[in-house]
Image 1 (cartoon, rainbow, N blue to C red):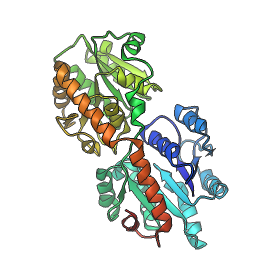
Image 2: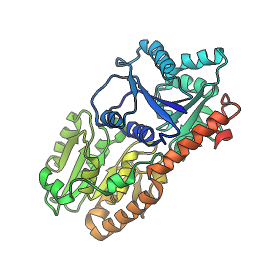
Image 3: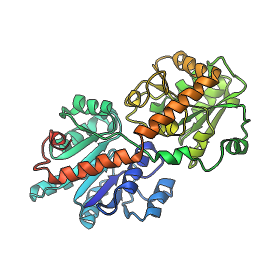
Length: 384
């Protein structure tokens, strides 16, 4: 069975990493996997990971913003790939729509899936929602990465019971870092007794780093020994100024894009995430797999990953004081940090391993090909 994944780019990001996990772990004896990347090559670790596995990817060289050339290039790339299943991700359906219409005109039964990696309200801009709606009404089967994402598809598009396949990851990679904790800390200039709070997220408005900085400055314990590590690409200018204004600049460390996330997490003590909205954030699962307690916003699919008070704390994000209080609890109580971290690692090992996600997608691929029709908004009901 030939499965072609279509995606915007392979820059560092949670959705992109999930995509790579899917492509790399499908059973090669049953699935012939390839990819179509709208953008050009960028040399990222994700790109290199796919290249090492030998999975072919066509890079189409998309320009920033709308690029009308993609219509013909996507069509040509799909004809070369000759897929049995087309599996799209993020906001690429706008460039697939003509292909869908062309296939229907010729009476072809093309099986198409689209994974929705965020809440439907935030996946594409409002003016582009008609494209998603039209695609879902014409046979593209939506797959939600969390039950809350599924509910958002019902709210926005009226889809009846969308399929849900939660994100997962290779858990063992995060349980076995390549660089020991003390060695990583020594290299980065952190003392063994320092308490490291870590956030792995791009420096984008929806990740709410401003609130996180305000909460960190409001903690009352460990002002000299606690540090906040921010790993992720993006413009640091305003956040650096805010950290200076809050008086915590010397304890806030902007690490940029990292390729050593398992080692970074293994050297950390608490994972923090203050997002305004989320789908099913891989960074939270990575932290839990590494044995970290999590303090996170109660948004999107995060409550499906964490039981408040067991593997960490879920907080409202309207006021930094709520976040600061939860962080302080773990700064003060080392034993509780350890207990919650152990619970997080246990839950990750049980629920988040990539084998669960792969089993879900392989089952969905098989059922999609055997379903009598994929042209209904209720198509996912016929499958799962």
